[in-house]
Amino acid sequence: MSDALSRFRDSWAHLRPDLDLSSMEAIGRVLRLAALMHHITDTALTDAEVTRPEFEVLAALRRSPHGLRPRQLTRETVSSSAATTKRLTRLEQAGLITRTPHHRDRREVQVTLTDRGAQLAEELFTGQLQRESELLAPLNPDERAQLAHLLQRVLAPIDRA
Amino acid sequence: MSDALSRFRDSWAHLRPDLDLSSMEAIGRVLRLAALMHHITDTALTDAEVTRPEFEVLAALRRSPHGLRPRQLTRETVSSSAATTKRLTRLEQAGLITRTPHHRDRREVQVTLTDRGAQLAEELFTGQLQRESELLAPLNPDERAQLAHLLQRVLAPIDRA
DNA sequence: CACAAGTAGTTCACAAGTAAATTATTGTAG
DNA sequence: CTACAATAATTTACTTGTGAACTACTTGTG
Image (cartoon, chains in turn green, blue, purple, orange):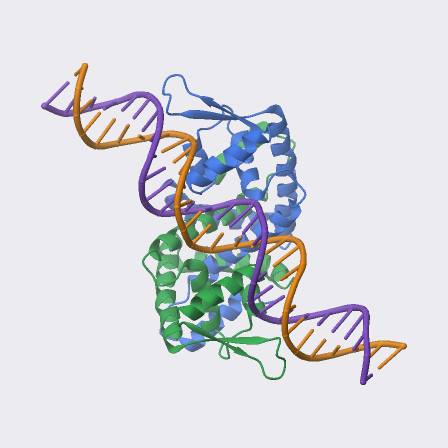
């Protein structure tokens, strides 16, 4: 059972036998899997109150007991600060979050979920878990843990930077 | 050595001990790793002649000996047909590809690389390989193969659909 | 204390993406 | 044939994302 990246590797190997293609199979699959997963999630959320990136903001806030500041949200969601501002404006208008200025340092803003925002975050998160476990159906629990562990070792060093 | 997804898992476990979080560590890391890798690639390509999505089009064409049709390109790059059209228009104006109508079926268009396009595709591809292997530095060759294999088993079933 | 330098969040002008409609063509059923 | 569904690519109208200013505020240094 072969996939797109096996084909890609074969093509490049034929074209450029001088190159070391050993890393493209792992990373290429990570990239492709992410693209396909995004597509699956977008489809699942078409009739939802929020988009996928907006959901990611809600999820980040839900797992942070005291809320987060915009700067932290852009880091958690790996995006630009301008995108975060737009999403927060949209989510605030939808009544899912609140923005309150910090009294100590008035440059800072504290973002917290409303009750409705928290409830929606959890609802959508359970759906996301469901889709993710469906994707992992081909692997048994031991293999899933193995995969998670290998990815952690790759992710940990760059996630700090 | 812990990463973002270990934290996320712990937060949700505390918040919702009723949920089965076993799949989020693997898939969550796939998604986060892809986002970070995109960021790395975008940065590396800031001064290049093409953007990352445009490069993906060039790479897909380079590994296909006879070129591809737009429909196939949107599948290979996991994006929308409208995005493909825009990218092709841009790449054609830059002199990196050519679009020639098919004589048999005049609805179809054959997209092929120009010599300059082919050369640029290979140049950028070697850079991409370099960045990918740097990302995998924490793993030894055996572990990289293991990771690639696990991901293939996840990807293969959905990549056909 | 003043003021340059730094930081947080937002705004702006623009680039890139998308879904849905459109154009052009081919295949097929009556 | 004709008409009607199917398919390929593109166009259109709109949404979302981005880098680079910009505003507002705080901090460290002389």
